[in-house]
Length: 414
Length: 200
Image 1 (cartoon, chains in turn brown, cyan):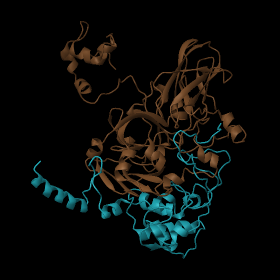
Image 2 (cartoon, rainbow over the protein chains, first blue to last red):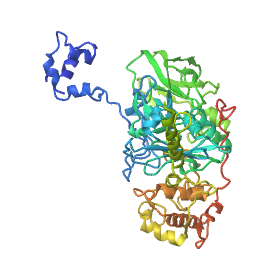
Image 3 (cartoon, rainbow over the protein chains, first blue to last red):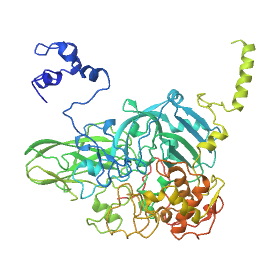
Image 4 (cartoon, chains in turn brown, purple):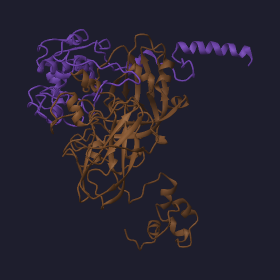
C-alpha cells in the first residue's frame, strides 16, 4: 500500500490510538485528517454495510491436503479452519470448516420457499415455513462440530491440517424435541432420518433418544442467519456427534422404527463393537493452537500456551498441559465458559527456557473420560504403537508439538 | 366475541383440518402435508424396502443405462479406475497401514470394501443412494425402473446376483449382501453414558 496516500488506513497506520473506528469517524481527533477525506470510496460502505476485517488479517480456510476443493468435478469437499490463528472459543462463520456430502455445491435456497416436513411415525405430519419455525420457542447454545476425518497425520504441518475440521458456533433455533412433540411421535419409533434439500439430498439417521434430548433445528449462527456453507436456511445440530449428522439445508425429518442405513450411515459403521462405540459421538479432545506446527517462537521468555478442548459427551472439566513430553502435567486455566459439547479455550502461563521441548495437552470431560494418548489407545486395542497405528474410531488422541531450540514448532507425529 | 360469529368460524376450521390445514397442537403453527406431498418428498427407503416403488430392472438393462446416463463418464466404462469412486471390485489391494482418503476415515479399509455393493449391509441402500444422489448434476431424475436396473448391474458386477435376476420391490430387499453381518451394532445412545466404558 502507498502510505503517502491520504486515506483512513494510512492515517490509522500513522499513529491513531486504538480509540475505535466508529468514534474516530464521527469525531476526528486533532491529528486526524479532516472528515471529508474519510469519505473515500468504499470507506463508508465498510462502516455502514457488512463489515470486513482488517486487510492486515489474512487468516483463511484451506482445502484438505488429501483432496482438492474444487475437485475434478468442480465440487467442494473438506475445507479446514485456521485454528492456529484462533482466539476465544467461537469460530468466525467465515472461517468455519466446511465439509460436504460426497463433494457438493453450495445450494442457493430462498428461505421464503424453504419448508421443513416432519412425518413418518407421527400422529400429525407437519410442514413448517421458516417464518413459522422462527415463531416457535427457541434456544441459543454454543456447540462444536467436528468431522470424523479430523485426524492428525505425520504429513500434516500445521494445526489447521491436523485439527482444522472442527469449529464452534453459537447456534440459535428450535429444539427438535419441540417439533417432534408437536407432531406426536408414535410408539415403536426409535430413529429419525434427517435430510437436506441440496442436490444429493444428503441424509443421516439419528437415534430418537438423541433427537429428543438436545438436537437443535437452527436458523441462527453467531448472531446472524446460518451461512450458506453451513446449511442456510436451516441446519440440524446434533450436539457432540460427528459432523455428518449435522444435516445442512434441512428439509425433512422422518420418524422411523429402525436404523435406516443411509449412504451417510453405511460409511460410518464398523465391524468391531469397540470401534463402533468410538464413532458417532466425539470423545474428549484437545489441541494446543499456540505454539503449534509451523509457528515460531521469537526467543526464550514468557508465552501463553493456548488451545481448545471439547467433548461430544458434555462439558470440559479439566485440561492439563505438559511441556516435557508427558513426564509432568500442569492444570491449564479454562478461559471461556465450559459449555456442553463446545470448544473451550484453555491457557497456561509458560516461560520457555529456549531449549527443545515437547508440548502436549489432554482434557477430561464431565463424565470423567480422559483424552487418550496414541500409546494408551494402542494398548487398549492391543496393537503395536508405530507410525502406522491409526487410533480406532474418531481420533481424539493427544497431539504433540515439538519445539526446537530455534523456536520452530513441528508436528510430533512426524 | 359474538358467539353467533364464532360458530361459523369453528365450522370452517373443522372443514379446513380435513383438507390439510391442521396445525401443531401447542403453538398452532405449521400445517398438515397432504398424502401426495409426503409421497413426493419421502425418498427414504428402509432396509426392509417397505417404501420401494413399483418397477423392475435387470443387470443387462443396467449395463446399457450405465453408459446412456453418463455413469461411465465418471466411474469408468467398467465401473472402476476413473475419477469417481470405484463401483466394481478388482482394484488394487489396500496398502497395509496406508491411511484412507479424507472423507473415508470411518470406513473399514480392506481391499474392495470401499465399494458400496460390497460394503453396504443392505442392497436397498444402493437403490436409495442412486435414486437420490445420481447422476451428477441430474440427481433425482432417474425413474424407478432405471434405478432398479442400475442397482442390479452393480450387484451383478460384484458377483452378488445373477445377470438375469429381476430386481424389484420384493426381490431387492431379499438380496443377501456379502457384508450383511459384517458390522457391529451401534451401542444404544444414552445421555451422560460413556460410549466405551474403560477407554482408554
